[in-house]
Image (cartoon, rainbow, N blue to C red; front, side, top):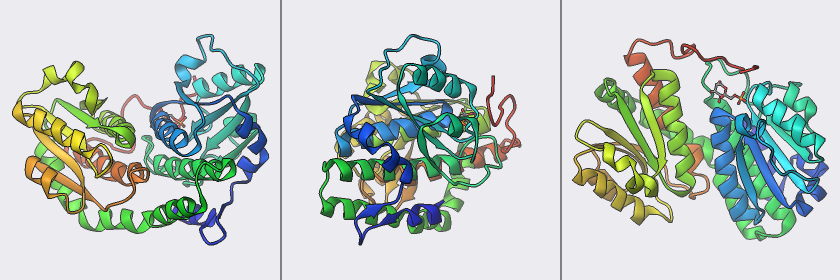
Amino acid sequence: IFDSLRGRMDAHKNQITLSGIDAIADKIMAARRIIIVACGTSWHSALVAEYVIEELCRINVEVEYASEFRYRNPIISSEDVIIAISQSGETADTLVALENAKEQGATIYGLVNVVGSSIARISNAGSYTHAGPEIGVASTKAYTAQLAVLQLIALKIAKLKGTIDDQKFTYFIQQLDAVPEKVQWILDNQVEEIQRIAKKYSDANDVLYLGRGYNFPTALEGALKLKEISYIHAEGYPAAEMKHGPIALVDETLPVIFVATKDSYHEKIVSNIQEIKARKGKIIAIVSEGDNRVEELADDIMVVPSCDEIIAPLLAAIPLQLLAYYIGVERGLDVDQPRNLAKSVTV
Ligand code: F1P
């Protein structure tokens, strides 16, 4: 994944090589909005992209479940650019949504893993994620690769549009360039602890995942991984929505996983953690290295290296993927072939 990522960026020359974006750069510059369509895990990377593209490029982005978008009657025009995200490139809901949008004149940008797949072929331009074949049904390394390429797309558009300056561009490239070492650090230093946490909570019936800002889609993705691999009911929520309903679920039996890396929402997420603690929920937190404050509040922690908040989704997803994996193993399940799930949902 990261060889391909590194091959596409050059901080010294201040450039990112994504020929697909060059091919439709004019369309993107003039776009009324970008609509990102996807399903499942790919939909979560779309949500991260919405936050990052709106922040860095100041272009209006909407994120749609392809499974809804294809059936309703959305307003689409030739001024819209649709980004389709799919690991398999064969997901029927996404493919049909694209056929409809193309008929209405939209430009399609495909972000797929499988070379030559149907979604790649229907797209006007695109980028491959080059994550290699996914062995398991649940999308994991494809998700990481999608996030990485979407970050590059956002940076490239921001550079073209002039919404970030050269200094900021170089800073973000350096942040991305440091991701492989940071992921390795998580794998070298956190796996034993994640296995211990997995054992401790493997009998849970329900788990709540909370996050804010760039960490909110990670909460959704963590919950989806747990559902897919461990068959435990899990809900991902924006932490600020907790008080509008899910807080009623909290008691001493409920594990609540906070994606709480250091970012501009940190004070807010710390008070959310305190609210759960006051109601005796069990707190598991993903924290930035050296964050003693959250460490003191939490029952268990998984640590990730510090990074810019925009990059955090790339790091924070890894412990959650591992946690779902080890809980699945602990429950004696086939983590590569979960029941009822297909790798490509082609109907
Ligand atoms: C979408 C997806 C995956 C999920 C499972 C079923 O696939 O929902 O996210 O893990 O494999 O399909 P895709 O469009 O990204 O191939």
